[in-house]
Amino acid sequence: MKSYQFKTNSPEETMAFAERLASVLTAGDVITLEGDLGAGKTTFTKGLAKGLHITRTVNSPTFTIVKEYNGDFPLYHIDAYRLEGSDEDIGFEEYFAGDGITVVEWAKFIMEFLPEEHLDIQLVTISEKERNIILNPNSNRYENKCRELLS
Image 1 (cartoon, rainbow, N blue to C red):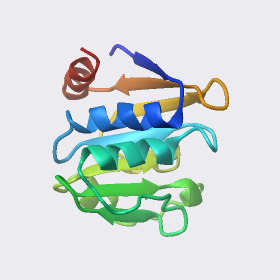
Image 2: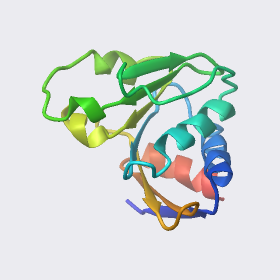
Image 3: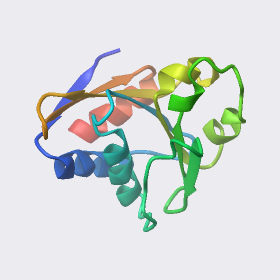
Image 4: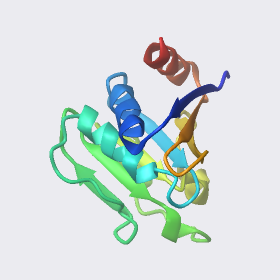
């Protein structure tokens, strides 16, 4: 599959890009977010939430693992950072196969639980405010969403 890249120059631009991505998402979509601490994973998720018309404040679910928000679709925000080295399944498939959109930060720690089809997004820090957003679709479904987003 082809990789897609987009550069942002501020947290606001990162949020706006994620907000646009929300417009091509549908129930059952799963997005993984990878990037160093401070790369903007939660900022990106805030943009998705805005695009889904979620009005609640979105913040990292680091200590709760999963937060749920209601909007056009439910948004399931999972932070798997604290699950490193754990083989505990906390019911991920219920989120992945549900009626909402699931965003997983630090997905590398729960790879065995992820559905085969999902959209991998890497946030690469270029400078304090600049980010390179790399979208890696792993199915035709997500390839089409990337094309629609970036057309």
